[in-house]
Length: 395
Image (cartoon, rainbow, N blue to C red; front, side):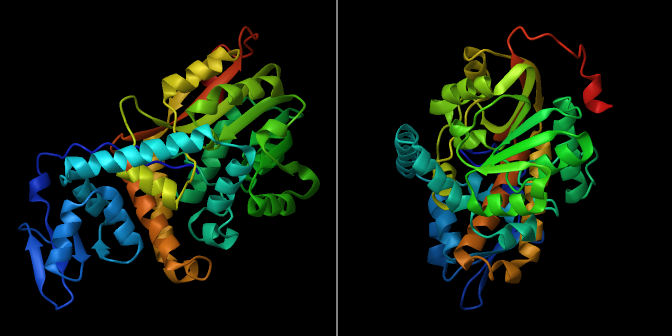
């Protein structure tokens, strides 16, 4: 994936924020209720003192307490996260946690090596294929879906996203297609079976490699390697949800390498979550890097485009899919929660709770515009234009 919740600045509370109704139930059976309406969520905490700590503390400490089972949320988890975002923690707490998040990320990014990148990938993606199967669609697509209409099923929206990418790349029979960070192979499978491409995919995840290699058989080539080791040239290249693992410090070398892999006149689609200008690391950032994506760092759209242009690319198209990712994360969370017991056969309760709160927070982050996700279509500068308009993408 390929997530949000990096540097999620405090959301602006709507005018009726103070009117939100919620409850807390304590271990002795007593209850504290705020508001006149039925509660949007109920916090199950041990004592009023713990509740007060939860209201006063920073978002990282609150998230860690949830993951460790110190309290439970019944009802609308996104509403509870939104509510916590409105609560003022001390400036000292925010400063300390934000500084820790910034400096640990900066150090990790500066010291990034191929071996460290591989360890980070294994931490996230090699949990268990069975675990991911519980909340992903049948094709195991782990990136933003594409909802042509809001009521599409997750499976339908993911197929629509795969087709959208293939059409943007103008994928034709016989095109040599490369998927960098190919996940479980869904995009490669679609490119081969429905667009006639000759496909290659690479991943650093052992679990993803095994799954993709078996499911694709001899229809495509899957390699387990870092993208730096790839050779040859390809007519079309897709990188979906992989750029988040590169980070702004290494963005230039990333595009420099991709420029050597893209054949003259070829097309590159870079699909990645982006951080808006002015958004800084905070407690939510620190939580995600510790429990979900170690080593992850987001670039801004402007920095991404600058790195691409500095290495010989020109931009053909940019599309913002932010509301699509909010829907995707919400559906993933709902599916995960519906499969709680099955999830615990693959991961422990701490991991399950971390994923649950992360997916809920990510849906909220995208919905409120604290994070976004862009598809950028690029070609080598000065390449002849085969298409003069965007109409072919939607035919």
